[in-house]
Length: 293
Image (cartoon, rainbow, N blue to C red; front, side, top):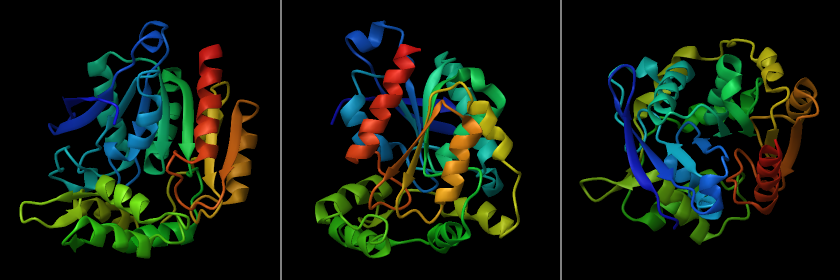
């Protein structure tokens, strides 16, 4: 695994938060290319981007934060701060601490929603953007599935047991995965606790704002798509996704215009892991566009 440095920063409300910093070396460190800010999904963490970092680190700098309540970041005292606006404020503080004013955002699911908020409030920060299987309109089927598992504690005696539980719950999402891939995913999603059990690596209370919101419609995010105009933007959609529909993905491309590329990742649900050949090739094309300016 490509080496990284652990970094920490403080949220506006006093939480000590963690990030991984994969440095750029050689040409990637002195040609002015922007770093990649990798923003994970709801129950994910910095480890979710290990495959991407394994391929790109060195050539590019990657900054991969654990959002509040995940992995090595502190849990929030108020569960109702587990919402996108709080995450945006946390990330804004991290960027200020690192003196980063321009970057490529790579946002998976929730991370893509945060990327959309960045575009709406500070589009000048974005040298490019990847929206991974997420958009302004989210399908009820996917939202219901997420509500069914988020915040439900699990405990397993071994990594193989955890991997098999993941495989059973996500067979429709990654039908091509074998045991080795499920174990690798388990080690990104779970941790070993003090009692020697394998448990999910996030605060179960992250589910509370989602349950409190229920099925209420949120803010209309479609106008935010116009903020991506002129910014190299990659829209990834899992072919089997139950969260981002084909119609929504196509509308996103239309709203953004010629700067957007839509890539459908075959035989994958929500969300692509970014190590699929189609995902990797599309990200490379996006980064090439960023370098060409």
